[in-house]
Length: 251
Image (cartoon, rainbow, N blue to C red):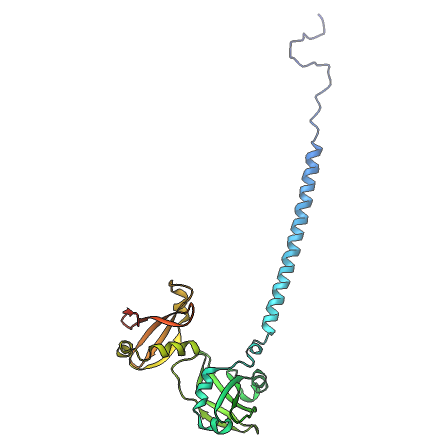
C-alpha cells in the first residue's frame, strides 16, 4: 500500500510549511505613537496654559486687593453735600458762600487712625472767602451709603467744630431731579403725605422689563411708600407713578 495520502482538491498540503502568523501592521503602530505623543504634548500645553491663566488670574486678584479705589474719587465734587452745607452758619462763617465741596482722598487716608472709622471722609470746602484749607469731615451710613446729619468742620488751625447737616429728601442729583418733578403731585401727596426721601431702587430697576433707559425710584412719604418710574433716554423724565395700592398713572 502506498504511504502517500490521497490529495483532494482544496485540502492542505501536509508537506508544505506551517502557515505563518500575520505580521503586525507597522504603519498603524507609527500612527498610534505619533498620536500619543501629540496628545501628551497637548496635555502639557494645556496644563502650562491653565497654569499661566491661573497665575494671571491670581495676579489680577492681588492687584485688586491692593488697589485703593478711593484714589479714583479724589477731587469729586458732591453737589448734594454742597447743598446741605450751604445753609450751615458755621460753614458760612468759615468760607463765606459755599461754592464747591470736593472729596480729599489724601486727607481721608491721613486721618484714618485719628478718626478711628472707615466710614468718615474728608471734603475740602471752598467758598467766596477764597480759603482753601477748610474741611468738613462727614460720616456715612454703611447700609444706606448716605451721609449722617452730624459732621465736623475743621478750620486751618486743625480745630474741629461739630455741625449739623440739614436733611434733604434725596441722595444724589438724579433723585433730586425726580423729587423736583413729583413734589407737587397732589395725587401722590394724598396717598403718602409729604415726601421724606427719594432714592433709586436698583433691584426693581434691574428686574423691570420696560427698557434699558427706564429706572424705578422709591418715594418714601410720611404715610407710605410709592414708586416713580423714569425714562432717561435723553434726560430724566418721570413717566409713571405707582401708589402704595398698586395703582399706576402718568403724572
